[in-house]
Amino acid sequence: MAGAEAWRAARRFSADGDRCPGRGRSRRRGAPEHRPAHLLWRLPLSGVEDGAARHDEVLPVAAPDFWQRHGNGAASLADVHESHFIHTNWGPNYASHPSWADWFAAAGGSRAPDPSHGRRVGLSSLAIGAARLGLGVALGQRVMATADLEAGRLIALSSVSVRLGQPYCAFMLPAKAERADVAGLVALLGK
Picture 1 (cartoon, rainbow, N blue to C red):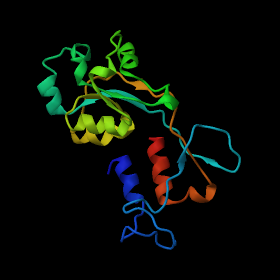
Picture 2 (cartoon, one colour; picture 1 turned 90 degrees about the vertical axis):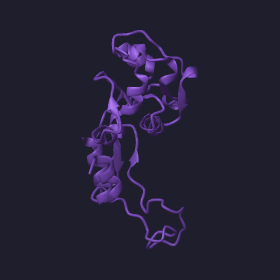
Picture 3 (cartoon, rainbow, N blue to C red; picture 1 turned 180 degrees about the horizontal axis):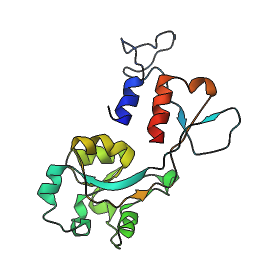
Picture 4 (cartoon, one colour; picture 1 turned 180 degrees about the vertical axis):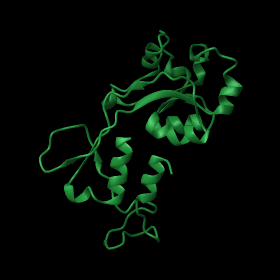
């Protein structure tokens, strides 16, 4: 099982989907019984274990059939039509996350595709999902896209990647560090 899939499989769900076993509160159907460790920026905290950090990166990904249909023999992403880019709007609190302009600069170019001409999404997972459905080329976070890349549902269109502005970190109380779901998440972050 790929890292994220193994972590999800280790999370416990109630059989009936309505109530948490051993707890008297209701929850929405299909919601996890326990929340994973909180993901925070790296801060020194006493009495809290610091899980392994991973500095993720984004790279251009697309569905193979999309690239076959719309790549039009493009020598590089610099030749791709503006409407084929999927733009992630990271929001005002995530201004340090990379854009297509950042990726092109890292690749040695100066192109800055206009988000008003392509598809726009509000989450990295939506960008990867849109690319997987053949809706365009996304800057996919490697951690989130790995399973799709390995399964052939997505292809990487370049080896050039851009690091995210901050690493992922897991901070947890020492008593929680031994739980299987928390340990799985920390292992995923440390890969």
